Image 1: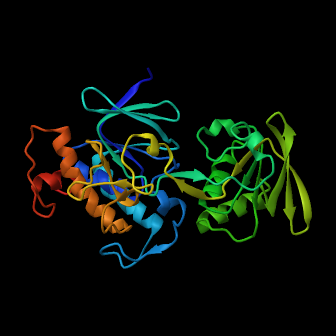
Image 2: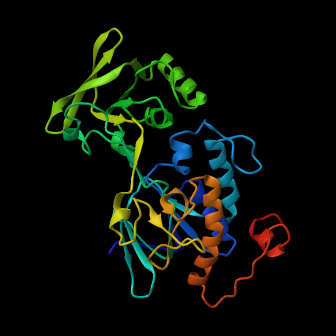
Amino acid sequence: MNDITRTDVLIIGAGPVGLFAVFELGLYDLKCHLIDILDRPGGQCAELYPEKPIYDIPAWPEISGQGLVEKLMEQIKPFGPQFTFNRMVSSLEKLDNGSFRVTTDENEVFEAKVVVIAAGGGSFQPKRPPIPGIEAFEDKCVFYSVRHREMFAGEDLLVVGGGDSALDWTLNLQPIAKSLTLVHRRPEFRAAPDSVNKMLALRDQGKLTFQMGQVTALHGDNGQLTGATVKSPDGDVEISCTRLLPFFGLTMKLGPIADWGINLHENLIPVDTEKFETSEKGIFAVGDINWYPGKLKLILSGFHEVALMAQAAKRICNPDEKIVFQYTTSSTSLQKKLGVR
């Protein structure tokens, strides 16, 4: 068996609710490890609307999606959470001792006394672009995420998209790629302005090429990519490439969670409203992935849910310890944990 990573609580999903769960669990001295299919913390906030303002976070009249993620990361820093990104949980099994063994799609193995599912609407799956025959190149020359940068070293790389993922990987991979071309259907981008400016500076220096248009065809044999056709405002353009990274957004699917033996309600996970436990003792569901009468799909609701879940998780992880409810405003022990005293 592969090396096993052990933790008190394994959190599936590193969106805002999963991140705040680290804080609430940390107050009870529970160590957390988070697994997420994306390449960074933040879930939908980071991937779909990092610049979009959010108006219903208490004490923040307005905060961007990325700003909220950054504040949450700052808040949980004292508890030293561990992260595994670019991974999907593929299996979950209960062990004889009551703990859970979780395996990822890269065959990494984790064991935890408690599992918290904070996967939003499910796992994010990349959208396949409407390019004929792209399936033949997938996982050979066409990839929807970057798990190992070295796979793109010395390659003629074509990146397609105009959001943060496309621009971030353009900037990260340009130094190691043999050549890099960024394709986007229009000259305006949805990415952070600083990233766009850095990309344009590299273009002006001749270190990468920006081509406006859409990829309409791929060329190559036996899954090996040799080039692509881009339909541009001035006609078809042929681009040589050996690797393609298309960033066409994400779609949410329940994914392997549906096979874990947990009761489901219309593709959501029913929970109680005392501790937000699922039908399986020791597995909790918080945030948009869960369902109960009166459920509201708000980040605020998820924050409330993890506060109650944390007490139940503490009872499972340390059944012999008495839980003493304390306020961070007045508890010196909690303030020491937070590093403010």
